[in-house]
Amino acid sequence: MRLIKVCTVMSLLFAMGQARADDPVDKNFGGPYVGGQFVLGQGQKVGNSASGPAYLVGADVGYGIKRDTWNRIEIGLELDKGKASFTDKSSIGDIKVNLDLNSVIMIKAGYGYSLGDSAFGVFRIGAGIVDASYDGKIAGQKIDGGTSSGVATMIGWDTIFPASPALDFLFGASFRFFNLSFDDLDNGNLQLNFPGLYAGARVRF
Image (cartoon, rainbow, N blue to C red; front, side):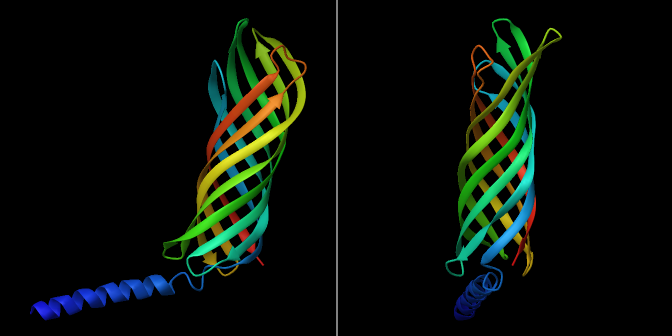
């Protein structure tokens, strides 16, 4: 009886291991891809401020390198635009700020690993440039801070769900940092933190 139990357990473990070995083999696809994404989160200015809603929408192009059954590397380029808002609590009062993120361009690199059931988790880092316009209001008076180009960086983690040999769906979380300097403002240096969730889809070739 004990031998039957041991054999049963060993058979189950073997079957689970075999299923795990078989699942991702056909779905860890490499090659070029192009897709789109939508990021929704909060704009948080470093310093005495209150956060507000923020979003990005754009394209994601890149290349996936299949290392083996369980691992992959991804290199990509992200092209986005969007908006971020926050309240800057300055010495002259609360400034309601709308920051237009006219363009965000980042090179990204990611390491992926199998989560089972054909899904992959990917940890990503990125760096690039951001172009933004500052528009604020205090006591009904408009403040135009002009435009600025600065540094954009990010860390993120997402899950890739292959829907077919040519289509992936992605869901994840990211933390983006934008460092800007506006010459038309008294204290023109601005660091915007942008934590958010994102979803996207991409086509592989």
